[in-house]
Amino acid sequence: MDDLVDELGALIADVKAALADHALRGARTEARDAALPEAVPVALDAADEAPADGAIAEDVAVEEEAPAAALWDRLADTSREAVRPLDPADGTGAEGLARIQADLGDCRRCGLCEGRTNVVFGVGDPDADLLVIGEGPGQQEDLKGEPFVGPAGQMLDRMLENVLGLRRDQVYIANVVKCRPPGNRNPAPEEAATCKPFLLRQVAAVRPRLVLVLGSVALREVLCLQGIKRSRGRETRLGGIPAIPTFHPAYLLRVPEDKRLAFDDLKLARARYDALGGRRG
Ligand code: SF4
Image (tube, rainbow, N blue to C red; front, side, top):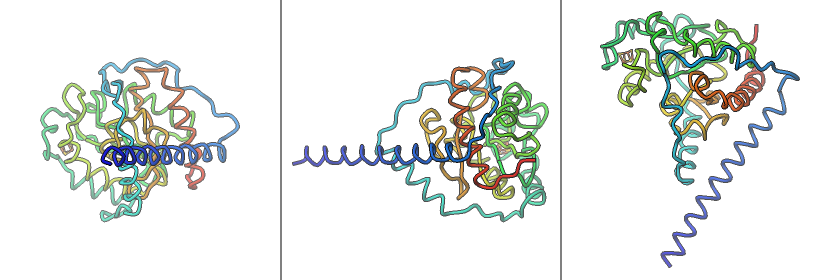
């Protein structure tokens, strides 16, 4: 009897996972078919070089497949989050962001403050319809105090301009942590947990129509999902806002063969951005 119950439990879990996967893939295909431009120039592969600082090396690691039941639980948790919109308690737009930045100040709330040059708060249009979330500052970002300014930043600019049709100054860009982790390691969970409330306040202040989540660390910390290779290109929600995960640009510089997958994700993002009324120009 116990064996039968176990088998039935496993079967139900498999069916749930298959249904979830089917539904999400169907939604993605539908969105692509509905709103794709006739021809989107592909130029993600020009002048690509590995980042000098070797950032985001962990993105390359092969990720273990999660059990089907666990994947279903995570999807269910994410959809519950969708009915809990982010609260712009700081105010909106430039005013809200200024209030958050003032509160952050010369932050020493976690150990990452020890090795940083600058707190890298965020950059872009305070009222952007697209908000991009990365992992954390690298060497050049730390020196300049601005996210995504090195080779990975140039790659991000090409991704935005060539596929989404958006300039860097038309979107808002921020990271999970605002200080550079030493040696460009991944931020530790406790560091991310300390810094993340400021990011969520930024998201609430900007009020984007769509969020683009870059890489496995942002995926884990912002969307509570594991495995960028499994989760990429599947729309989910961040506080009620549609969110699409894809590879981090630094990873694409290291593994250029995955640019085609990223291109698919960005085409989906473009279609959703347009369908959600995102501004361009
Ligand atoms: S990473 Fe975030 S929480 Fe940690 S010191 Fe920097 S700004 Fe503060």
